Image (cartoon, rainbow, N blue to C red; front, side, top):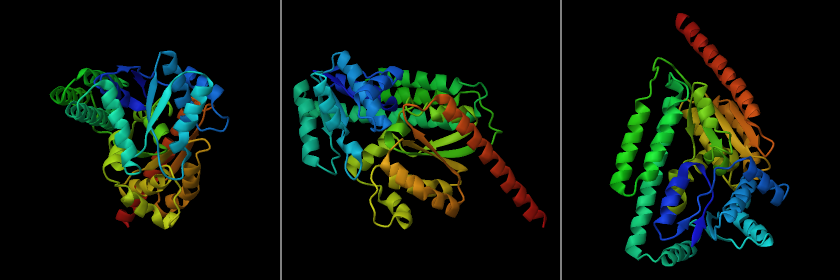
Length: 368
């Protein structure tokens, strides 16, 4: 069976290993490009959001490469994303691609369906239950290792003395993790990758701004969708922290729902209203970033994403109450890298001036 899946950040390295080691042929999805988006825009409904269009384009590209099955995720709650796969399947059928989309609903939503689809993957690949569990475990270790090296790269990048060195070391670390085939090799590759990053020449006398990244999961996790915003900010000398990584998202939706805390934090601004998607998260995480002393927050949102639009309407009150500036970037097929960079540079300038003013006031209080 020729199987593919959405391209979402660097997780494709682990998912490729998963597909290949369950006895299937993996059609690796290409990184989203202008062609991917063109295909998606051409065949998607006009007012569909950018994740829908990018995924549509990706599915058509892997269909061209011979993919027979696409594994993706569903969703629950008042957000259209949970039904994307239904529309994608409809369009793929209309275009006579012969591709079948299999969506894994969150186990907390439908455990029986989740297990049924896992069983399909195992049986079509000819694995025993024990072999399949081992493959899943190694895949999980690989995902965790990928997240670890990426997190460290964003911590180090604002201190690098040779621009671009951190990113080059990150690619090397990911390449080593791609080649790892068991838990011991993954641990060795991760440690070597972390060492590569720590060995980057750094100027630790710097005091970088700290910006939190919040928003809708796809545009936050897929660098090609957000124009590599974390690398862009890092090379401006800003330390970034992303609210969503695949490991944390997976834990919240397959093992135990830990988001209750975030929802409780956001509750004073939302009441009992469920706004779907990651809208409540965006509000709660803005508060958390303020509490942890971050200088600002960037909200990434697909154009026409209702949960993030609702969150954006509430965030100014949060920003005022907690004294943290928030920049919202709505992303669609018209969004260009130059425009994103210009807005980020202006935001960073604002935060630097704000820090200077706060420092000056602090000195004046001490003198008085």
